[in-house]
Length: 352
Image (cartoon, rainbow, N blue to C red; front, side, top):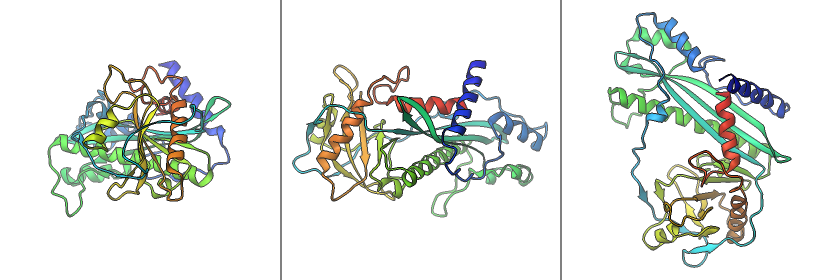
């Protein structure tokens, strides 16, 4: 444990000195400057009194949560000429990315008030830049928030939580049904709010990169959530999970049968209330005898009507194939994870 604390301190010092001229991102209503889980727990205990039971942390809610999103397939529109097919990536793998962006989140129950959970959320994101074969922090953010269901708490309890600037985890839009009083429902809503906070931090860092840089940035996940990012040619999003597969019928067989260093035809991805992007599937590693999604990623880049789509898809795919080494072990997602993303996650774990 002492070694981990020392590593966290070292990385925080490194983060502060790496780019001293970079403008700080604005804070977004943290509950306190040092509001870690333990600090927030002490503060809530002092605010609510000894009669309120403080929950012992048994792990994060993310560890307990399971995805309720059903697996599905979806039809998309092709951008590359010719039939939808598997295509070998032209050229040898070559490094092209100079930086990697990733984020993490942690949600923990602080207390239950008449069954209503009060949750502490941590959201963090970092851009790690590769310089002379070593990783350095270009910029990072760690923010904390407290989540409490206002409609499920006595008014005096909510008033005592007010100094922590709590986010209402029972709030809902007028066109949505009344939120359930069930504690698990409130916990799920809190986790989704923390996830939204993490995505917000990731988008802010990606937008800042686009404002200051034109060099290629590897983003862990999709890029369509921010129009500024989705329209910038220097950003590449890499999606590792496949609850939704953007292919149907024969096209789905083509995706699942991709060989190593093969990609699919490029297609247009048009998410609702998000920016359209160009996308394709790429197999990073040989999946013979393994799960059909082993080593499979989906790539997102800006849609540029004036771009040579096949040439750009091959170029980015060569960059991604080059990131397959060194291995991101011991992470269980090593077959789809770039080492630069694993380094980013380890950095964030050390400072949160």
